[in-house]
Image 1 (cartoon, rainbow, N blue to C red):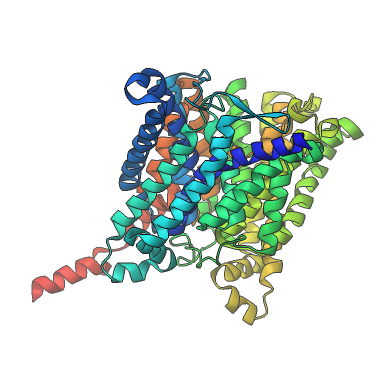
Image 2 (image 1 turned 45 degrees about the horizontal axis):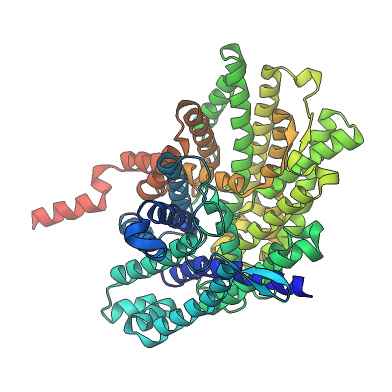
Length: 629
C-alpha cells in the first residue's frame, strides 16, 4: 500500500509542473485564441536559462533567485515575440497561428543547441530540499513535496489574480467578448501582450523548476508540448481549473498506467482525451467555442477546371519529370522519388483542408498505417510488391474510416485535437506492440521487387502513382461530390436544408484523404526499406501542414507546389548547414506573415492584378474621379 501512496505523490509532483505549463497555454488561448505550439519552446528556454543562472551566478542570485529571474527573462522574450510576430496574425485562422509558432519552435531548437551545445545538462539540487522524507516506509523526495504544495498555491494565486484585480476582470471579459472590451476603450494590444507574458512566465517557471528533477536537453519542448495539449484539451481551452484537474488526471494516469496497464501505458492519456472530446467536445470545464475563422479567400473565389493552356503546361511538366533519369544521378533520383511521395501526402491533406475545411493535426496516422500495411503483407504474408502496394493502403483506409466517424462530429480546433489524439494512439500502439510492429526497432528489409529496384525504375513508379493520385483527387474535386463537400464546408445548415448529409460527406472525404495518405506511406516503406513508429509521429503531420500552407491552402495546386518546395528546401538545408531548423523555421514564419496565401496564391494574385486593365481598377477610378472634381 505504501508503494502506491508514494506513486500517487510522485504523480502529484509531476502534475504541479505540468499544470504550470498548461495553465500558461490555457490563459493565452482563452484571451488571444492563439494555439501556441511554441509554448514548449518557452518551457525549454526557462530550463536552460535557469541552469545558466543557477550555475554561473549562483553567488549573486542564489538558486531560487536564478529560477525567478530566468522565468522573468523568458517572459520578456515572450513579449518581444508577441509584439513582433503574433500581433500580425491574431485575426488569422488558427492553423496559420499554429504554423507560425511551430516555425518559432524549430528556430529555438537550433538556437538552444548553438548556445548551450547538444549535451544534456544536469542541474543542482534545490537548497533546503535535497533530502527525502520517510512516508509509510517509502522515501519521498522533499522537492516533490514542495511541488505538490506549489501546484494548488499557483492555482489559488491565479484565481485571486483573475477574480480580485482589475486586470484579471478585463482578461476574463476579453475571454468572453473581445469586441465588447475594445468598444469600452480597453487597449487590446497591451492586454494581449500582458496575457502572453503571464502565460510565458508560467511556462518558463515550470521549465526552471524541473532542473532538480530532470536533465536539461534540446528535446524538452516537443516532449512537454504533447502532454500540455492533452491537459488543456481535456480540461477545456481557456479554463485554469480545468487545466489543474486535467494535469492531475494525466499525471496519475502516467504514474499508475505503467503499473496497472503496462502494455498500453502510453496510450491511456490519449484514450482519455479522445473519450472526453467525443462526449464533451469543449473539455471538462470549457465552453463551446466561437465559429472558427476560415482561411481567407477559401470560399470567395470559385475554382475553375484547368484551361487548355494549363493542361499543356501540366503535360510538359510531367514529360520533363519523366525524363529526369536521363540526366540525374542515383542520389537525385532517390530525393526526387521522396518528393513525389510527399506530394501524394500533401495533396491528400490539402484535399481535406481546402475542399472540406477540415484541418487534421494527425494526418501522419494514415501515412504510417499505409507503410505498416505494406510491411505486414510483405513480411507476414509474403505477397509480391504490387499486391502489397494495392492492399497496404487499405489499412490507412480502415483507420481513416474509424477515426473519421468520430472526428467529423467536431469542428475547428477540437476536430484538429481529436485527430491528433487518434494519431498519437496509433503511434503508441506501434511503439509498444513490439511483437507485431517491432516497436522502436521497426520492421526492416522491405526492398522493392527486382523490376523496381533501380533508382530510375522506382522513381518512375513513384511519379506514375503520384500523377494518378493527384489526377483522381482533382476529378473528385470537380465532381458533384466535391461541390457538395464545398457546400458543407461553407454552410452546413444550408447544405443540410437542400438535402446534403454533411457528416456523411465529410466522413467520406476523410476516408478518401486517409486512403491517399496510405498510398504515400506504402511507397515510402519501399523507398526507405523499413517502417518505424516515427512514420506516424507528430513531426510528419506538421510537415504535411507546412507543405499545404506553403503552397496555398485556398488554391487547387497548392499541395503539389508546397510539397516540392518544402521537401527540396528541407533536404538541401540539411546537406548544407547544421542549422537547418533555424533557417527552415525562419522561412515558415516569413511565409505565414508575409505570404499568407502561399506560393501559388501569391502568384495567382500577381497574375490577376496584371490581367485587370487600369480603367477597371476601383482605386484608380476613384483617384481619377477625385482629380476631375
